[in-house]
Image (cartoon, rainbow, N blue to C red; front, side):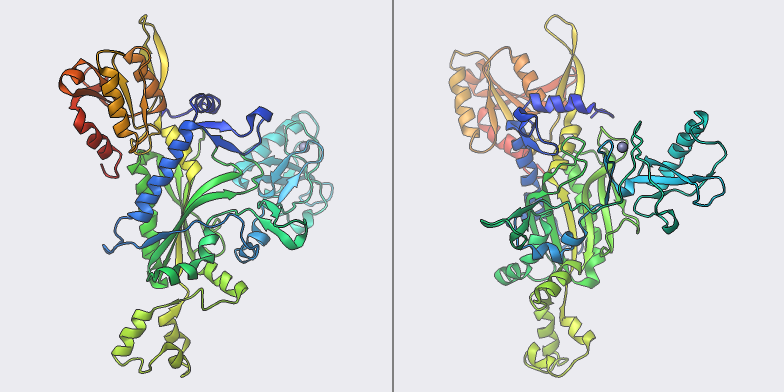
Length: 555
Ligand SMILES: [Zn+2]
């Protein structure tokens, strides 16, 4: 992957090769929505499947070598709206926004930084200067520069006192009433007061549109897992610790969708809620944090491009004990961007659902094994837990057996990871064309597990029994993996086409195949002494096993 990729060029490449299209492009598109083309859907399916295989069906052993118990769910996108009341999304899932009536800019209020300039440091006759920046430190030089320019043009007098910088959500009380100028270049409008802007898409379930049947498109898959916690426990008899996983679409009405598919309004999540005893939660938090970072590297993401970042106290959601963002150095950005968040959510979600639903028993966990063990040893000399509760044991004693589990949540974005995989695979190099002139070409170096097409099969010529041999091999492989048959043009050109779409193996059927059942396999990523991808002879009956090994986890 080059250190920097031009986003427009990259998006065009993705479109031309059928990875990603702008949604409803024939009507001019729609901001924040994307479609996956014929190769893109294969790539994204492979990514989701790799996650499901490696995390749900076959997670590695836990910190003490124990088997990890994990099951899956597939919940509906629209749920009872109380789910979103309990989760806090209805009340709190909103970024306060400020708007400029003049130029129409709509900006997150905490991204507008401003300060007052005054003769005497008071707010009388003070004027405000503003800019768009993440924080006061970033804003400082920008605002200084803005003031210097205005003073030079004599729009403002020099030597004014500069107040500390605040963002538009944290305006000191005595600054109220002082107009905040729009930070957009060349606009002299004034910003509105910050206003809540809910990020959930709303709809109505039923024939009549009214507030009584208002529903939301889920903004995350996690809550469906919490809402089904009891159903899963009852139907599986899982014992702590265990995980419930789900992949699926989620929707957020982002104010500023950007960076291609990185921040879009419809996206797909791959989430695990891992339930454990509160005393063990830090151990599991570390386990999942390390495991999730390592997983990306097994699929070809260079670990140098993966940066785990522990969120600071001021960034943490109010309920979270700790969150690590696994960030990726996208080649279109100067700063690493979040690929996945691993959050220690404590007992927040189950407690919130217990409170709103009134079903505290359903959302707790009863450690029957411990109860039985202690009972046998005489510590709890009653027959049933219920009976024992009647003897008014202390809260601490009850808590030993019945408690709300803590939750570790590794939450990954399937689209973000798809984008990271596309970026990581993307390589530009120069090769001579037929006349020896150097030309630029693109090679996609996908990991074989993720590659949209695993192998291409080429009969060298369309005669002498080669097409028949090639078709037989193609049909043998087709039920097992995505393979491509190409009998058009020179073999070199066929290689180039496959390199561009990231096919790791090309198999040529030639005279040796007809006479002795030997094919030539070209490994795109194994470079021989001549600087070209290595080619080796393999018996046709071994091809299937070789390819299956390459696309098997750990293969
Ligand atoms: Zn404006």
